[in-house]
Each structure stands twice: as structure tokens, then as C-alpha cells.
Length: 560
View (cartoon, rainbow, N blue to C red):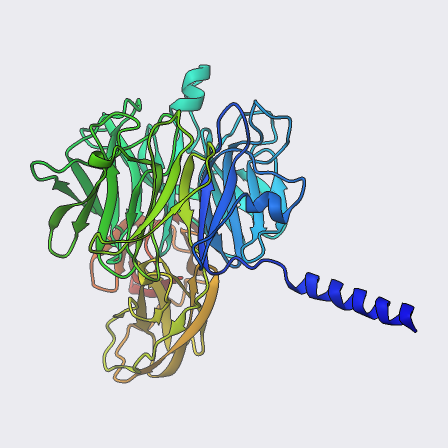
């Protein structure tokens, strides 16, 4: 009887322990580079009570460690993706990995990948971005690699993103790929040599490259997405001397336009660190249209000031100054809490002194709290915040179109997410209930509807926010359609697919291709009866005109 009672108590106690595992959903993760030459990287966690939990990877995964010099981390779809430069530090015999994937709530390791490139080419980790639920891009000193998120296997490298320097120094510290950001239908990547590369995440191809300022003599140091959907770029020299330039660049993804924003007298531009790459202390609020960055006198380890830029007011201000306290911001270790808009900043005294403390400031610069770390050589990298909220779709009014012209619907407010900005959400069409009535596409985050016939149809849109999805529906009614009917009895086939126009049985015919607004997109002569031509055009409805003896050819072609 006593034995049975003790057994019940034991199993009940074990059950409670199993359910009492730590859940990291209320606090802030602080990623630490670690003491180079001595140990691997770690992650500390400040909980909701303001108490530190140190080295949570080792705590939750006994015997496991990260790699050396953590460079980036992000939470997406309930997983915490952690990128380090090397798989282990030279000063320890404890193996880690360049890529570590954890459960974001428990920090239990799901997968570790030792090498980004398993062909023998050295590829040390840099930036990272999840493209969709199926794949992510991993930046390195040797290009951008594609990570399959189903089996956690590297599936190749994006052509044109590699490092063209062959000497040992250049292959590590020149030609690197840094910050990666997904905005609407594109991924933006910073390349130390080439500037801003624009990547199609559906084809994994570089579609455009914007060279750095001064005709490419300079490059971009880091990039950040602001609440209004603009991409902001700091400016750097290509050789990582730590030089600071007195302006930042604004890039508008929807148009490709750029704007140089000069710093007023007395305001320093963001620090940069292409040499021993870090993401830089350049960040934005999700609730306010403002930017923050740290800076100093232009040299490394001099970041004792933080500036704030109010984008809507075009106002610069000194936000915090730690010079009188003999404290500095360590590298990139400052980020904005997406829920509260509070700024978390990690400070230190000197690289040789194992003193680090983290402070929390509100958006006015008032100090709310301070959390000193226990003495150690942590060298914090960046803060990462738990992703607890999910997107909630907003109501969208029905759309009534009474003519044949395309209609554009702004989707900026299609959903709200307490810990993410609308500009960072990815919208995708999953269904058009009647494709004979309309065609629909998402272009630069807006819904483009092209009438095809009178009738009704519904567009179903998936909204993905940090890997969590919701959906919204747009009811569309078309009346008074007066489109162009296809007339070409002798053309057996004419269609566009994969950026290629195919026309059969029209050898020698001169054609003109117009977009729906009547602008000439292309003109050519079909040189064969099975004619194929590259027409790399945006999605939408096009009209193909041709003239043969005794007959005009008019065709509607839809690029989806």
C-alpha cells in the first residue's frame, strides 16, 4: 500500500516537472556574440519580472551549444532561427553550428546545420530572412543560400550573389552579403560590393541591382523597413574603415525611387561594420514612423550616442547620450520592442571589461528600467522579441466596377498584428472564385483587379505576419464591361507563360503589344510559325494587335 502510494506520488511529481518546462514568451532575448577565441555564442533572456535567465540554449539543451559569433536571429512561425559566423569558436572543443533552429517558446533545438556550404567553400553566416513557410535565405561571406524549411537542407545558392574576391582577406571581409529584408513580392539584400540587390523570391533570381552612392564607390551599410513601407539605407565605405557619411538613403519599393536625406549639422549618421559584420544598430518602430541608430565619432567601439529620426516630421534629434557616464552601445545591440515601442539598449564600458547592462527607454527617452548582467564577456549582438500576437483581418468593402478599366485596392490596412507592422506582412492571392469575371494580382502590396466580363467574383487573400496567417475576402462585382473580344480565327495558339510569348501560325505578321492603359509594351515581327519571344512584363491584362492580309488580329493576353 505504501509502495503504491509512493509510486503515485513519484509519477505525479514527474508529470508536474514535465509540464513545468520554461516558456519564453514574456520577456526579451539577448543574443551574445561570446568571447571570441574562448567560447561559443549564447542567448540570455530577461523575463517579465526583470530577472535574467542565462545561456538558455545550454539550459534547455544540455550538451548543446551555438556556433561562434552569433550574427543574426529572428522568430518566424513559432521557430527561432539563429545564425552564427562559424560552427565553433577556435578556443573551445565544443561543437555548435552555423544554423540553429529552435522552438521559439521552449528553446528546444529542432535542428542544427554545421555548414552553410557543404562543398568545402567557406560560407560564414551573416544575415537571414524567411521568404515564406517553405524556404529562407541565409546570407554569408560568400553569397545567399536557400534553406528548405521542411527538411532543413541547403538547396543551392542564388546566382550572382557570391564573393568575387579570391584572396583569403577578401573572401572573408569583402564581397559579403549582409542585411536581408522581405517586402511584398521581393527580397532586398545588401551586398558589400554590388549595393542593393533585388531578388524574386518565387524564382530565386536577382532581378535588379542598385549600386551604392557616388556611382558605386560607396556601398550601403545596413537597411531597415519603416512603418510607412520605405526601406532606409545607411551608407558605408566598401572597405569597412568605420567611416561615417552625413546622409541616409530612402528607397521606395513600389516605384524604385530613391531620396537622399542629409543629416543636419551636429547629427551623426549610423555607424556601420562591414568588416566584422553585424546587423548594425539601425532600427525602426512598428507603431511610430521613426528610426533610431547609434553612432559616435566614426571609429569602432565609439557608439555613445543614439539619434532619432521622425520620418513624418522630417526631424532629427539626439535621443540618448551616454558619454558623461563613460558608457557605449555595444555594436548592434539596440532594438525597438514591437508591442510597446520601448527601446532596449545594451551598454558596456570597454571591450576588456566584462561589464554589460541593458536599459529600457520609452519613445521619449525616459529610462524605464535597467538590467545588469552578471559579470562575463557576453558581447551582446541584438535583442529579439517573442512573437505572441497573430494577424487579425479587417473588413474590406465590396468593390463595384462599372467599366473595363483595372482597379487598384490599397491593402495597407488589410490586417493588424500587435507585434508587427503592416508593411512587413506578405499578402498572397489564394483563390479567385470566378476567373472568367476578373483576374487579380498583388503588385507592390496592392490588389490589382482586371475586369474580364460582367458578373461577380471573390478574391481570397492570405496575410502572413511573421509566419502566422489569416485571410480576407474581397467581393467584386463587374457591370458594363466593354472589353475587347479575341478575333483571330487562324491563330491556333497565343499565350504568355513564364515570361515568354508564344504565337502559332502567324509567320511574317507584325505585332504590337499594349498594356491595359494603352501604352505600347513591345513590337515585333513573328519570324516563324511557332514564334516565341521573351516579354518580361508585370502581371496584368495585355492586348496583342497584329495585321494580316484581309484580317486584323486582336487578342487579350493575361499575365498571371
